[in-house]
Image (tube, rainbow, N blue to C red):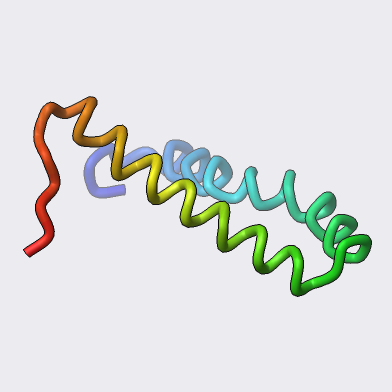
Length: 70
């Protein structure tokens, strides 16, 4: 809030951060009940691997620089 001095902007920011969680939590609970906790955990971990791989591929392509691990 130091940058804008606008409390409404801060509230909108926190609302935008909470919105995906609020929208997905109901469906996620139903899916977990139907498929089982273990399967959902494995599928979510594969989703994280896919997201990380997608980021590792697209970030260097969009910025034009390679990311090198030291």
